[in-house]
Image (cartoon, rainbow, N blue to C red; front, side):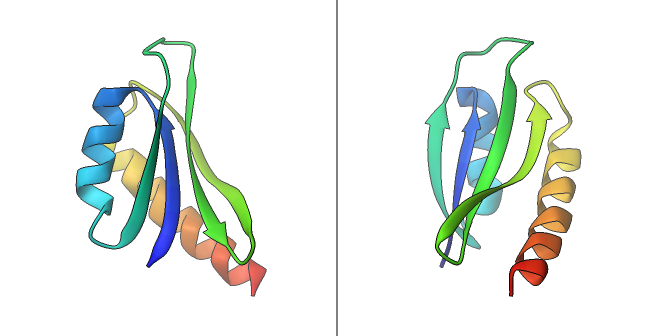
Length: 80
C-alpha cells in the first residue's frame, strides 16, 4: 500500500484520513489550528517523501482531494 503523510489540524486530518485510508497507508501529523498555517500531504515515491500538495486548513475538502489525486498521478509518473 502506498504511504502518505498528512500534516494538518485534527479536524482536517480526520476527514482526509477517512477518505484516503482505503487506497493509502495514511500517517498523520497534527498541527495547530491556525488560519495562517499551511497544511500539506506528502507521499513516499521511491525512496523519498515528496510534497504532493499544500493547502489552507479552511479549504474545501473536495478541492483538496482533487488536487491531491491529480498531483499524485503527475509526480509518480515523472519519478519513474
